[in-house]
Amino acid sequence: MFNLSMEFAVELDKKDELAQYRNEFYVQKGSIYLDGNSLGLLSKRAEKALNELIASWKEFGIDGWMNGNFPWFSLAEKLGEMSAPLVGAFPEEVIAAGSTTSNLHQLIATFFKPHNNRTKILADELTFPSDIYALQSQLKLKGLDPKEHLLQVKSRDGRFLEEADIIEAMTEEVALVVLPTVLYRSGQLLDIENLTTEAHRRGILIGFDACHSVGAIPHKFSEWGVDFAFWCNYKYLNAGPGSVASLYVNKKHFGRIPGLAGWFGSDKNKQFDMEHTFTPADSAGAFQVGTPHVLSAAPLIGSLELFADADIHRVREKSLLMTSYLMKLIQSQLADFAFTIGNPLDSNRLGGHVSLEHPEAARICKALKERGVIPDFRQPNVIRLAPIALYTSFAEVWEAVQVLHDIMKEKAYEKYENKREVIA
Ligand SMILES: *Cc1c(COP(=O)(O)O)cnc(C)c1O
Image (cartoon, rainbow, N blue to C red; front, side):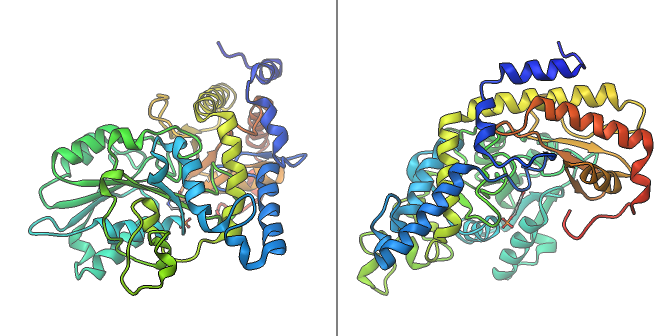
């Protein structure tokens, strides 16, 4: 099916239904950006939305809360509604608020209710460190020792998790499970539906960190009965560095008192009564804490409009085509250079990036950057390459592999130290 010529890449671009969206992004000349799973590029629509909200501040002052095209008072709810189709949720089940990590704190503070022998939280040993820090500190706040009460499912090979191992660890001592949808290093997509069903069969609540899947992979959180989820919007959703994050809470949990309450979690009609009795919103909005970060939420408006046009199912389809194309090129062009593909090959198990392992990964990344290909490095030996459906072309994927081939052949990486940069 695949052919290794440059012409073939050009043909794929010609047939690509999403090709038009590339023009909507600030793609830099002379650079092949394969790091959109870490920080997505700026789109013109996101920029326009940010400018619009700056203008509403300029024009309306305090009255911007209720005026303009995107009144700030309901902006978080509006963004939740716009995000809901990406994760398969009802509009009122999603809210834009806080950061990934602060949302995880909120959700654990809300959903982790140790009782009798159920005092443990189940996570895994490959997950993102910030999640583990948050879980450890939430356990400590409840007077529980994380060494005993935080269980981390082991990986058999350092790359992947086996659902069977996770399910086996769902014992009668576990109150709550928190897992990634997609592992940030190996790109493994977990079986969210199955894990949710199995957790519920055992009377355990389950939530997901969806940072590496929202905007790349469609979900059906509501249909699957996932209790809660949280994600950032600056990776595949291109809402900018430090942009507002999002969270999802299944309808069946509406009315729960947030573990970390604040006035923006109020029923919106009551918020300005200024009562000292908290009346939570009957929606995911209850899990907001303080005033929304309007300017860091603004770009997300434009980004989500773009996704509504492009359609997440088409995004996923193209993403899978690009990653499989990239893997084919790697297998044929780089066979002599000791690379290992460290992500699942099955498209039902693969997230949005290719995880290429090599003992010299850190310095190969430096050499790639010098030649205009932007990957990222993850300890200890992973080069992550993410072709992004909305703005990467097949020709760029082809070229990136040629650049990598030349670097390996010339050993051009040898002039660098095999050590990560401060940000890697
Ligand atoms: C990017 C990422 C985070 C980042 O959390 P912030 O609070 O936005 O800094 C957390 N978890 C995972 C899995 C991530 O990929």
